[in-house]
Image (cartoon, rainbow, N blue to C red; front, side):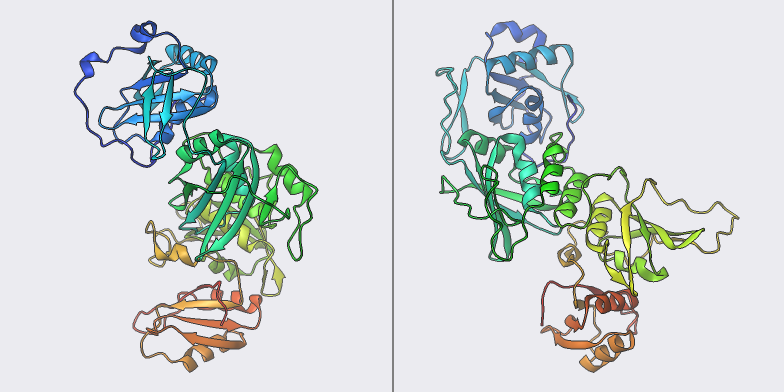
Length: 483
C-alpha cells in the first residue's frame, strides 16, 4: 500500500485553477453528502497531474475501470469496478491522507454512479444505472508500438507489464516499418481499456522504450506457436515452431513467481531494474533471481585490464577498481542501473582476449576512491568527468546505437581526410581481419565487418576514442547491420 506516487509522468492538466478553492471542503466534511458509489470525486490535485498518478490512488483497492480528469480544475473522477472497493478506498484515505507529488488530495463519493466513455475516449459523468455498464471500445486486443527502443523489450517483459491490468491471454510480437510492435489480447475489453489508459505514453525504461497503444480491429488472435515471438498462455502445449527457441519452463516459472516485478507500484511503475533483469533473463544471459544489488556497480571476472572499454558501449563508466587480490576481476560502476543491467545482459559470457568474461551485479553501492595519500597502485580509476561519455545528454542519438556484440562495427566522427585504406590498416593492426567496409554518404560514418565477434570486440576496445588527429576521436559501437 502506498500513497505518495512519484512524479515525472506525462502532463494531463493545463495547470490552471478554476478559483473555486473556497468550495472545496475537506473530504471528511463532505463524505456524507453523497451515498456510496463506485465513482469517486478527487479534488485539489496538483498541476500537471497525469491520469496514471490518479489511477495509482485506486489500484491498491481493486480494478480501476474508468477515469475522467477535469482540465484546469485540478479534479478527477475515478471509477472502480465495485462499490465495495470504492468504500474501502474512501475509508482508508479518511484515516491516511492521500498524496500525489507530495500534495495532499481529497477524495469523496460522487453523485454519479458510472462514467461513460464514447469512441473518442472522452469520459463524461453519467447518473445511469450502477450495473457496471461501460461504453468502451469492444476489442480486447491492443496494438502496441515501442518508440525509442534503445534497450531490449521482450514478449515476457510485455506480459509482466500488461498483466497488472487483467488476464493476458495471447501476445504476438513482430517488426513493421523498422519498429517493434505487438498485439496483446486480454480476456475482456475492460482490461484492455484500463491498460491503455494507464500505460499509453509511458516509458518502460528511463527516457526510452515508450509505449504507444491503440485498440486493434481484431477481436481474437490466432497463435500457432509458443516461442519468443508469440505466446498463447491458454495453450501451453503449442509447439515452438521451426527455428524458434521454445519457452524455457524454468524461465516461465521465474516470471510467474515474480509477476509484480515490473508494476509492483504505479507510477514509478515500470521499474528499470526489474525490466532490464527480465529482458536480460529472456535473452538467456543471466538468471532472473539474484539481482539483489540496487546500484549501478558490476562485478566482472576473467577480464583483461582494458576490457572495461567495451562497457562504454552500453553506458557511461564512472569508476573502475581492479581487485587487489584478484587482478583478473574488477568492480565497474556505471552511471545508473539501466546501463549496468544492459552491459550485463550483453557482455556476460562474451569471449574477450581468448577468455569468457563473467558479469554480475555487485552488492557494492559505489566504487570508493582511495583515501587521500593512500597509494592503491593505480588499481582505481575515476572517469566521472570524462569528456568522452556517450550517454550524458538525455535523448542522445547514441542511445540508438546500442546493440549486442556483433562482427560488424559502426564507426563515426571520421575526419574528412581519412580513407578506407587508412581504416582497414588501423583495424588490421589491432588484430582484426577486415571482411568488408562501407562508407556512409557523408563519409563521416562507416561500417566495418570483421571475421568474428571476438575480433570486433577486441578492435572496439582498442580503437574506441582513438585519436585520428586534430582531436578527432573515433567512435566505435556494435552495429545491427551487415555489409
